[in-house]
Image (cartoon, rainbow, N blue to C red; front, side, top):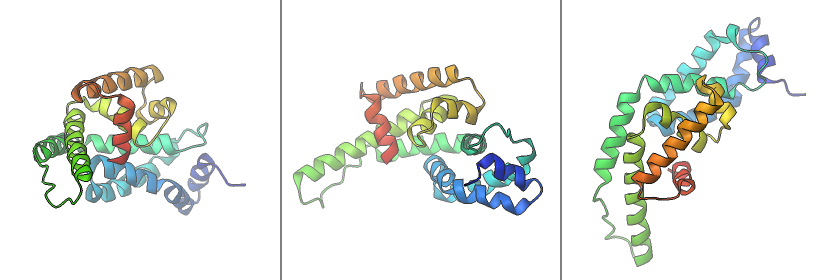
Length: 195
């Protein structure tokens, strides 16, 4: 039987090398999340920092939680918080850089040209919409849309009540929908997942 994350973390208190199993299980997911939030170069550094922080705090891990993912996402999200100003600037720059960039002259088919222009415009609008969200609302939206965490997992990751997760997600979806001219928020989450 495969040990739970809690069992591995508990064992790592006496056998530090056992913690490597937590890294092996969850690093790819944390890497993907951080790369989407901050780009691949920053993500590499923050993945290492996430697991070093987790290792340092393993004595305080709640053994009642068999799955360490929400805990690790919480650590990673806190590290993202240290880079929020850069993140907001990147979203704004991306929004500005993409505005009007519909150079599709090399496309050999009219449908592909139209699809590319629409996709670029939507990504630009989405980047601007994400940049306009509060840090807290953006964290909740991206954990749900990108990492497909449940409300309960997001609540555990961010150390907030489930009701707060629901209200922040509702507010974020509403603001993104408004910024995208009334686009269905489910379609926005699909763009986030593919972005």
